[in-house]
Length: 266
Image (cartoon, rainbow, N blue to C red):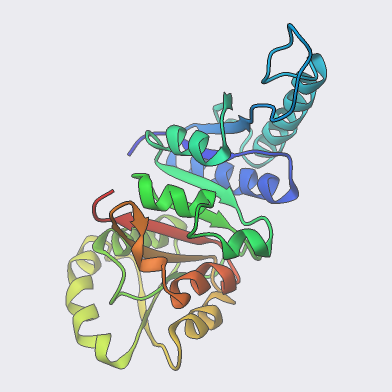
C-alpha cells in the first residue's frame, strides 16, 4: 500500500517515541506521516451554549495544538523533509485510529504501560487494529536498535503475509532475518520460505531453533533485534493467533518493537 504511516498522538512519552519511529518508517517507505489525536466527548455536564467536545473552550484547543506541535517537531527532527499532516477527530482512540488506518500502509502505536499491554487483545488500540484493520500494526517498545536483525517470530504460526513483511523489512533495513522455529517446524518452514528467499536474494536468513516455550525463545532473540514480526490469524473479528498466553507474551516480553501482521477474514 502507498498510504501514509498513521500514528496515534496523546502527548505521552510513549506516543512521542512512537511518533519518532513512525517518522523513520514513513521516510523509509517514501510516504507521508499522519498524526492522529482522538478527542473524547465530555462525560460531565457543560454550561449552556458550550460544545460538549470543547468544555474548556480555547484552553482545550491550545492543549491539543501543543500536543500536535510537539509531535510534529519530534517527527521533523527525525525526517526534516517528511510530509506531515495532522488530524483531530472526535471519538475513542480505538475507533479513531481504526478509521484512519484503513487507508494506511502502517499503523504505529506506543506501548504505554504494562496494564495496557495486558489488555492488548481485549479491546486495546493495538489489538483492535490488528483484528479489524487491513495494515500491519507496529507496537513501539524497548530499545530502538538500528543495527540488529529482523526476527520472524514463528514461521509455523505466521501467515505468509507476516513472512513477506519480515523479508521486506530485512531487505529495506539491510540486515539479516532470523527465523525462529521448533524442531518439528523445520521442514515446513524451509518450504514456505523458499519463494521469499528467491524474491529477496540479498537477505541472509538465519534459522534459529527455539528451545523451550516459544515466548521465552522470542524474548531472548529480541534482545539484539531491531524488530520482531508476528503473524496474526484473524477469526470473526478477533486476533485469534494472539489470544493465547504465548501470543500475548510476544508483545509483553519483546525487548524491541513488534510488528503485528494480520491475515484472514476481518
